[in-house]
Amino acid sequence: MSTLLRTEHLGMQFGGLRAVGDFSLELAEGELVGLIGPNGAGKTTVFNMLTGVYAPTSGTITLATKTGNAEQIGGLLPHRITRKGIARTFQNIRLFKSMTVWENVSISRHFQVPYRLAQGVFRLPPFRKAEADLRSEILELLAIFKIDNKAEMQASNLPYGEQRKLEIVRALASKPRLLLLDEPAAGMNPQETLELMELIRFIKERFELTVLLIEHDMNLVMGICERLLVLDYGLTIAQGLPAEIRNNPVVIKAYLGEDAVHA
Amino acid sequence: MKNLRSTLLIFVVAALGFGALQALIVAEILDDYTLQILCVAGINVLMALSLNLISGFTGQLALGHAGFMAVGAYTTGVLLVQAHWLLFPALVAGGLMTALFGLLIGIPTLRLRGDYLAIVTLGFGEIIRVAINNFDEILRWAFNSPDMVGWTGGPTGLSGIPGYATNIMVNNPAAFLWIYPIVVLSVVLVMNLIRSSHGRALVAIREDEISAQAMGINLFGMKLTSFTISAFLAGLGGALYAPFIGYLSPPGFDFLRSVFFVIIVVLGGMGSITGTVIAGIGLTFLQEFLRTSAKDAGNGLVVLIQQNLFPSTISAGAWSVDLVPLSQVLFGLILILLMIFRPGGLMGTRELPLTRWLTTPWWRKKESLP
Image 1 (cartoon, rainbow over the protein chains, first blue to last red):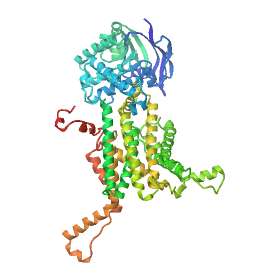
Image 2: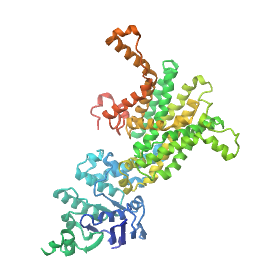
Image 3: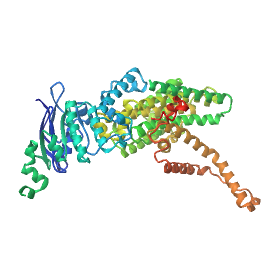
């Protein structure tokens, strides 16, 4: 399998605080990798560097393009990175609250819309055709997740679980190759988490995605991730198969403290 | 198809309204004074529409729209007075010149967020006003000719702007013929913009900038586009104003005027075009009513109180009160009350379902609700 994303010695320094130091990761196409670690370990900072919210202060991020070339994406603006095929969801849901469900999804398609602003303002033929196509495409996508009947509902009126789902659908609509999920199970009950695990497995197959996810819910992480990376204080302290990580004394120490290792 | 029909329908309704108003003018039921206020209302609607696009829909608070209006008004005015341009090209030039100003101001300022943008646009609005005030002096200095006749008239103002009609007595009806269609067209086109992918992108920026950017929206590019279009419309508002009023002076485009446009937008609902239209017309008439009728109304009320509660004082002379100085206070009071009872503005972010009312027969109304 070929490499989709590679980061080398990635670092992020906020003034005197080193949030992430020397983060190296290689993601093969089609992998499902988990990024775990205690609170404040720098997981979300890694996501923010990968998606362009922060420009890394050191190191490189290389993305394999659709044509197979390698391209540096570190420090690009977020919308540029999204257009290159990396989509994300947010830890605290960031939907466009006052917009409807289908409008939320349509935002991710904006950069692919085939008409120009003036053609939309004057309602020229390319506009009509493109809007009709866009709408039916989005309804199809919503139907896959069984929320097409709520297409006209305001996003903030959806129940919590469906808001999380909508965030994932919205990310998928930009047709990414790499999907970054930031704590997708936050605030979910065990039943919902189980359904989410199914959902993540399903979209990974259905949309031929590579997935990198941050999660605290160990059932989810151990259940679906093929490989894990553990961060603590901005450094990678362990990586490997879920079973290896589970019994790794360094990881247990990071999570539970010194005593837990000997207990 | 539904979209095309609703657009056509708006035009039909607008044309009918236009015809009705024209009939009222011809029948002399609508007097010249009311017509004049209607023209001012139209220009105010256009200005507020422009502000709503950048502040209500895109979420970037701008406080310098009087400055944009001044650029449009002076461009058109100077072209008409000094260069003897025809009316239509002068109006377009007023809009385009302001769009250019918007672009140039937008490039450095739209990188700022929230309050900072408001402060900077406020500053630019004032800079434009002061620059116009001193424009002729600068010209004389630049050309090193102290006797040169200026362009803008500086503090004395730019007078003698040719009107919409050569006969000044019919300037208001002629102005109405221009202002009404241009405002209707602008409203329809902005509505079209909002209901396209680009418009949704603008609203997404208002809702959550970080999220919008993560979904592939070019934040700076979209904001700049919105700001430039907004400046164009504001310039057009100013351009329409110049031949209507015939005389321009810098103090007329001060901060208070910018605030008046903000009030229209907030009161109508940030993010509602029909709200802007309603509030724009309503507030223009309300202000005019308070300015002209406050005295009569106040006197009537005081005399009523005197007659009913203090009849013994009538012999000493009728009471009178001048409410005109209070009209601004009353205006403020009405705004405060409206904000208490409708904090999101009259319409919030909703639109009047005008097309649904018009396309759905009354007997099917109940079941046709979504």
